[in-house]
Length: 231
Image (cartoon, rainbow, N blue to C red):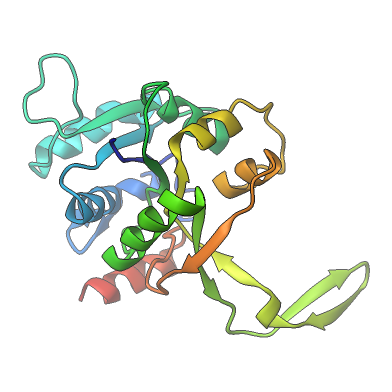
């Protein structure tokens, strides 16, 4: 039995106002994506990592790996590679499909799907997601909503009980065969994350506690928070 993680990194940096895709921006002197991969390698040296990158960004990633003396992906003629590389797709759904294609069809175990620009999931949260998924099959980390929430309805709005809502993080962990089957469904716009894909397939999702530091770095403000977390 082998566990996997598919790390999806397809950002373009538009909200960053940068020409450099957000996953390649440095945080604490190292590209965000490298910190993300290191966190999962820290969780488990034997975890099979699959990195999904747009094909147009892969040469730049290899250049960064050489610049920062970071392991290159496993490729023909490359020594010391410790993870696989898959091409990004049109949407996140299709990118995850491409990552899943590198997992054998008869594989048993748990596969996580994680945002490449979330470098701070705690090891405890990662472990809890994987271990809970061995029994529950579909697990996502969440955190409570701490601010007042209002729902829009036409030109009006009203307060809703925030205790009824949770903010969703990654890694989202699933039985490998379940996620493979769910990803054979036709794509629809309601697939906003992997849990929504599995849910549409008819399987219930189990929630576990996430960690608030596990932010998704998408704006310049997020970068400042990330620098503070590292400091």
